[in-house]
Each structure stands twice: as structure tokens, then as C-alpha cells.
Length: 291
Image (cartoon, rainbow, N blue to C red; front, side):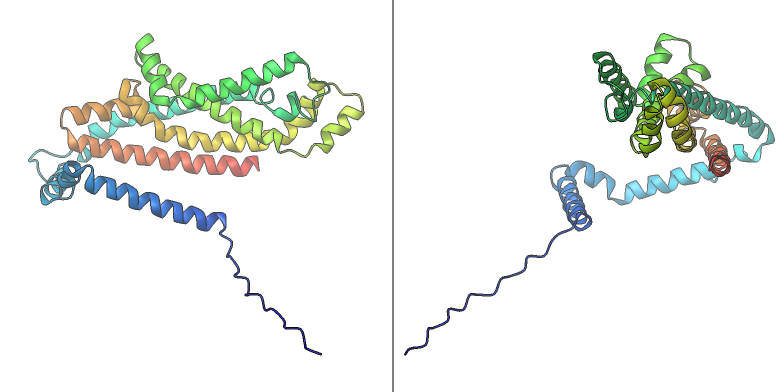
């Protein structure tokens, strides 16, 4: 009897799985290489104007202007009168940020539950009526619209329609961040444990009672945390909003750059650094209290 010949199959080659992080790193590397290739080939004029000794000399001269070494006058950051003047502008900047985040927080606090899918049209909704679907869709559209337009554009529109000042800048900051905070608050509600709310519903509580006694106590601490985080972002954005004559350090920064008062620019940057650090520390302290 002849023994059957065994056919040996070729060994399977294990294909290594590529994780999300590795794929992201590869894609980012490809995008960086493509971007630099485009700059160095398609946009040679800009690349040649940037990577040369003349650009380095201009940058070094500008740093000397900021430090006051290229001028015979006393730098602004050595004058007490300039410090006092910029201190008032710094207070206006902080006031603008507080008013702006206050407007955003008030609008988002009223609306974020109406933008939560699980409460309005999901598993926690007692019934899915056309009215609740419409309110949910309108609220989410408001969140998307307000946060899609940057604060600078809102400030341009508001300052054009009204007089320049702190209030238009604060309103511009409030409009944009109301959409951001509203979306974050809605996502907090959508991520809550639904069992306490279901218990309230089984006990006969209506939608308003579930929202007041089930949703708000659970969502409010995280909402306040997001509010304080956004305040840190807002204080950094005030200088950009101030560029369109919305007041504060931003307007003075634009004027100082326009009139080549570079040591005043340095003083404004110092004050800006001070208030940003102060707001960061205050926000961290308030977040610890909220937790």
C-alpha cells in the first residue's frame, strides 16, 4: 500500500494590526512631509523669503525693539505711569472675560438640557413628540451655529452694529462660548447614568421633575468645571477680540503696534501674562471647590 502523500500548506503570514495611535502618527508624518514639500516647491517665493539671513536679522532687530535696546528713550516697562495706565486696561480685560463667560454660562445653563438627546428624544423621554424633536433640533442647531463662528467675527459684527467698548466684546465672547458650553453640557447629560432618572420616572415624576431633581444635581458639577475651563480660554481670546476696538489690552496692543511703540507692546504682553496666570490659578482653585 502506498502511503498518501501529505500536501503541506504554506504557513500563513500574520498581518500585524495597526492601532489607531500608530495610524495617526503615520498620517501626521505624511501630512507634515507633504506640507513642507508644498512649501519648498510650490511656494518657493515664500520659503526663500522666510529661510534667509535677512529674516533672521529683522527678527533680531524686532526683539531688540521690544526690549528697548534700539531706542534712546526710557522703555515703557520702566515707567510707573505706564504700568498704572495698563493696569486699568488689564482690569477691563478681566471684566470683559468675566462678563463674557457669565453670558455664555447663563445661556448654556438654560439650554443644555434641551440639547440632550436622551432627555428630549431618547430613553429618558416619556414620549417622543414632534414638539420635543423640534426643540431638540433647534437647540442643537443653535449650539452649532454660535460656536462655528469665531469670537473675532462675532466681535466685528457687533462692534459694527453698536459702539466699540467692553460690552460688545463680552457679548461676542458670550455668543460663541454659549454654543461651546451648551454642547459640552448636553454631552455631560447624555453620559449620565440613566438609572436614577428612570427611578424618578417609575415613581411618577414628570420630565421637568426628572430634569430638576435627577439631571441637574448630577450634571451641574461637571458643567461648572467646563465653565471654569472655558473662562481660561476666554481670557486668552480677549486680546484677539480687542483688536476690533472691543476695548481692553487688545485694542491698546493694536494701537501700540500701529504706532511702533514696541516697549509698550512688551508691557502689554507682561500684563497679559499676569492676568492669564491669575485667571488660571483662580480657575484651578474654584474647580477644586466645585469638586
